[in-house]
Length: 503
Image 1 (tube, helix red, strand yellow):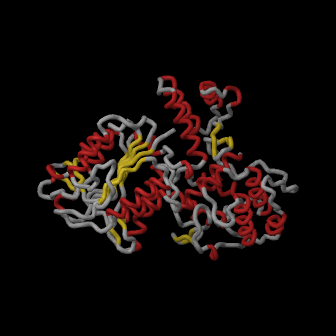
Image 2 (cartoon, rainbow, N blue to C red):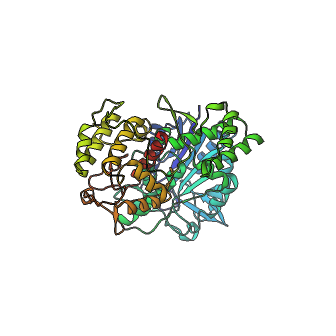
C-alpha cells in the first residue's frame, strides 16, 4: 500500500526578522488537512509551539531542524511509489545566488551560516526513498528586499535537476501576502481549498491549476498586489504531477492512468514496457484505429482477447471500466426510453413530461433532484466525485437521452460533452478551457458568468445550454452562480469521464 508522509514547518516568531502573522496557523492547518483529509499516515510538524516528536524538540530553530533532517533522512524509509511532501511557511532569502529557508533564529545579515540551504534540503528529500516528492514553499515575504528578491530561481533549478516537484507561492521579484481577513497566507489558503472539499484536487497538476485560478482571484478581491504561483514541471515531473495522491477526489480517467502507470512500475521499467508505454500513449492520443497496438498491450498485462481499449479499474468497491480515449460524440447508445427502466428505481415520467412540454427550467431542476436521489445525496445537496464515478450508466443514459430526444438534439450531457471536446476539453483541462466552454454554451456573456436565474430558458438557448442545475451542484453548492468556480470544472471533468465510460 502506498505511504504518504510529510514534513510541515511554519514560523511566526523570528528573532532577527520581522515576525509573520499567520505562518504558524498555515502550518497547523496544513498538518490537519494532510492527516485528516488527504490520509497522510505521518506528518511531522515544526512550529512556534508544536509538541515534541519522540522526546525531541520541534521548535523551528536551525539546530533542531538540521538535527531532525539529518536523523530522518539518514537512511531511506519510503518505497519509490510512496509520496513525501515538504511544506514551509516563513521567510526565504537568497545569498550568493543560493536560496535559503530561514529558521526562527535565522539572521538576514549572515544567511549562509544561519539559514538552511535549499541545496541541502533537496539532497535530504531525495534520500527518503520516494520518487514522488512535492516541495511547497510559501517563503517569499516582502521584508529585506535586498536578500529576498529573486528567491526561488535556484529552487526551480534544483527541482528540475532532481525531479522534485516544487510549488512556490510566487514568481521571483513578487512577494507572498498574508491577508488579515483570511487570517492566513493567501497561497496556503488557496492550497487548503484546493486539497479540500472546495477544490477536490486529486493530483498535483490539478492543484496547480487551482492555485493559478484562485490566488489571483483572492488577491484581486482583497486588493493586494499580484502574486503568481509557480510550479516546475520538467519531463519527469509532468508524469509525477498526474499521480493520484487523494484517491477519493480522482475521476475515472485519473484512476485509469494511475493503473497504467502502476503496470509500468511493477514491471521494473523494462525496455519492453518502455516501448509498450509509448504505444499506449499513441493509442490514447490518436484518432486512428489502433486496436492491434492495444491488443499487444492487453496480452502483456494478461487481458488477452477480452481487451477492448478499456482497462479494468476498481472504483469504490465495484469493478468498472474506464475508457482512456475521449472521442468527440454527441450521442450515447439510446436505452429503451419508453420503458424508463431505472437501475435505481427512479420514476422518469415527470422529467419526460416537463421536457415534452419544453419547460426547460423545471426539467433542469427535476434532473438535479433525480440525480441526487440516485446518488443518495439528497440531504447533502451536491454530487461529489465518488458519487459521479459510481453513478449508474443506465440512469445517466436515460436522463441524457430524454434531454436529447425532446430538445431535438440541442440539450443533454452528451451534447455538452461534444461541445467540451470541440473547445479542447480533456479530463484534466484547465480553467481557461472551462471559460471557453462556458462562452460556447451560453453560461458566460460579456466575459462574465451568468446567474442561474439569467440563463436562457427559451427554445433558442445555445446548444448545450442544459442541463445546468446539475453542473451548479457538482462538488459545491453556491447560491446563484452557474459554474464560475474551479470546483465545477473538476466535477464536470469527472462527469465527462463517466460519460466516456458509459459509451
